[in-house]
Length: 223
Image (tube, rainbow, N blue to C red):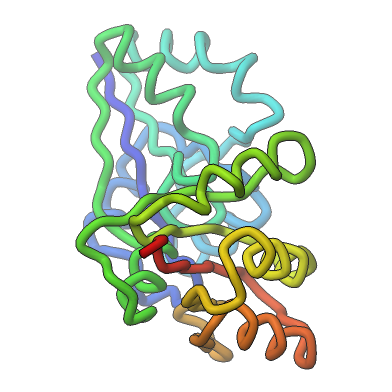
């Protein structure tokens, strides 16, 4: 019986990869990558020559059974996403579930994920929190926001730069203009920044200064 390793990769700074992650990627029979072009740069940087194939949201449904079969036959696979920990708003859940159901061992390595540093840096309560990932784009968005308006735990969201203004506007409408918000972008990268304040203040900031890069939004719970 083989094994599946879920291997976190750096979200920006390449020095954030672990020694163990490099070892697993070098020793695996095959690396499953969300984007082979993007991951190819990472593998080249660390002199990892393991064969790599695409495994992403558009093909994972079709390949899961075949991959599980190969692991049952003795092969060891390493799954990586473009950045961070696989299955956290990235492909990985379907294959992990299939492996668990088939009796294939799954081992998720500790490592980089964007929401943890964003949460800690926010200065908002982090003893209890809820990870929401990306909000629905259209259908179900209003319903979700109305429900979250009553959430008393700190909330974590992922957002793209071109949708940040829309999302912050919705926060002021559904959560209130004085709800505390922290926006972290480009975490671990050269232009990393965190902007904190009320929903209204943070919205005003990014209206005047359009954001770039990967974004994590932390929102205080309803008091």
